[in-house]
Image (cartoon, rainbow, N blue to C red; front, side, top):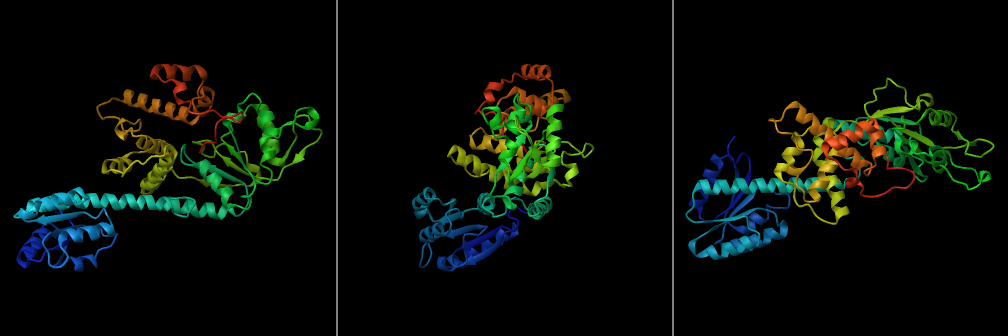
Amino acid sequence: MTMLDSIPVYLVEDEAELARATQQALELEGATVRRFARADQAIDAIDGEFGGVVVSDIRLPGMDGLAFFAHLREIDDAIPVILVTGHGDVDMAVDALRKGAFDFLAKPFSSERLVASIAHAAAHRRLVLENRALRARYDRSEAIPGVSPASERLRSLVAAVAKTDVDVVIRGPAGSGKSFIAGVLHELGPRRARPLVTIDAGTTLHPDAELLLFGRDPAAGLSHTGLIERARGGTLVLDEIDVADDSLRARLASFIEGRTIQPLGADRRRRVDLRIVEIAAAGSDGADPPWLHRSGPVEMQVPSLGERREDIAEFLSLFLARHERAFETESGPIGTNVLDFIHAHEWAGNLRELDAFAKRIVMGLGFEAGADVPEPASKGLRERVAAFERRLIEDALRETDGSVADTEALLKVPTKTLYDKLARHGIKPKQFRARRHGPGGRPGRG
């Protein structure tokens, strides 16, 4: 591969011999060169999608190089322009640099110097265009982003299932976006005008779980409408609720099968018309039947981020945009080091891990200091396992807003074990308590 492999270069030079020699030198390095003797001819050939580099003399017939540069800035102020100057034009070239020109070369210049400048400019242009493409994809109309085959299959399946109004079981690895898919099913379905209510593990572990779920009848005193009844006519999401105790499990199973509830203090059962979407526990392989197994649900598998590698940059762009809005700031262009990293990293935490990565970038922390950077090869197995364990605990605490009880449920570890690990890694849960939730517990997970 040559240094300027297939890079488009538009060369604007009215001295025929110099133009011919420059073109030959650049083509020997692999560039695709178009020559123009006048700037107005080049302007007609350039638009905002131009993916190459412009090399222009300042002294030109008709429109000079500086006026040409100003016109290019109006077309796209990120088109890289390298100006070629005589000794008397250096001051003008320096002023153009201040206004956004990429580089200038004083005659006579070496081919090596020009080739190096073009290579640098072309890399910058590629980065600009890729960032624009990533930002533009964020605005795409499809509810589920991504162009990978896995994303296309998921998008088609969700679109088809959403219209049917049948119950659905969603499976997939932790952090893959299962709760998001549940929301999309509701928004695309016939019940979208009615409530979407989520019952998660935190709710089922609450001391007043039966009251929160089934409510209290006015006849029993102070009335309370339960979460199930609040979803009447809409969609009820059951988000990894296998941690419920036996008594609550029995009541939930009865409700799922008969779609009726009996609030505390009520003398008879009430029918509740709703659709149920069950989010199966991460790692569930179908050995244990889902809660909905008797209702004939449709089952769908959400792919891991590893199965959607073509979409990683798009997802990063989406997360960056969201955090930029939240922090009312701009993270700037995505550098090549970040792009290289996101495509090489394994993303064991899937979209949740990528989202945390994007948040650190927007906060200005840089990815080198992030918890998700691969461990150095010099570290042994024990150190790598410890680092991975620490990341899992910290991610769980972020998700639960520092709630130790909810983190126990999420990680499925005993209280003493979790506290031992918190102490070993020097993790303080209070550092993760960004906000508080009401008695319904933490938000649903996906």
